[in-house]
Amino acid sequence: DAGVTQSPTHLIKTRGQQVTLRCSPKSGHDTVSWYQQALGQGPQFIFQYYEEEERQRGNFPDRFSGHQFPNYSSELNVNALLLGDSALYLCASSPGAGETGELFFGEGSRLTVL
Amino acid sequence: GQQLNQSPQSMFIQEGEDVSMNCTSSSIFNTWLWYKQDPGEGPVLLIALYKAGELTSNGRLTAQFGITRKDSFLNISASIPSDVGIYFCAGPWAGNMLTFGGGTRLMVKP
Image (tube, rainbow over all chains, first blue to last red; front, side):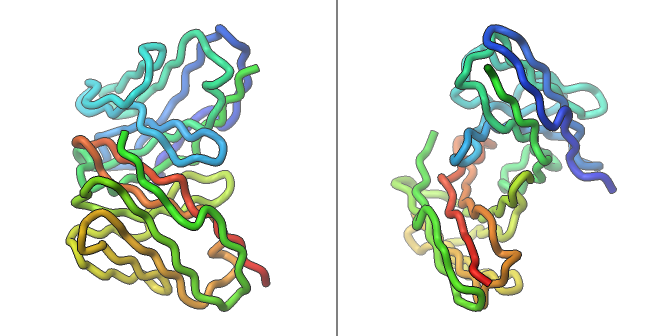
């Protein structure tokens, strides 16, 4: 049973570029959440997708957008990259809305913006 | 988002020692969770607490949900080298948003 898988694992972009990160949830999970983890800090909630719609959003600008597909997989898109967007981007899945907070995380995609 | 404060920020202990760390908030949480993150990995759930005053164990780990609902504690007994990592407290906030503390980095001397 595959857990949460993310791709790519590492990538380097330059300021102003756009990036797309991908996530496949754990089998049986229908909800995907995205988190940004800056170096030395705890993860910060970006948004959550359920039934192909953005269900809840954290304090992130519109440059951050996402999508969920019918097979529950998800993408995170970031436009007009800034140096401060350099971070580990974590995808987490849960069955249902995950109100219990019990999330399964992937290994993350480490984004470096130069 | 809501602020969760963890202490200590880091700990360097001898193998075999017991470890205690805590997490506090200015607001009430109805659920407290403890996650561990190893280098190069995503966080993994260790313990979930759902009731004020609850004490829950998972092997050598014991966590408590503070009676005020504004704090939680995690204890690790007889630490071993694989306990190395960053421990995060977390709680669901404003619906489905999981908010995390800044983490406690644990280092173990063999």
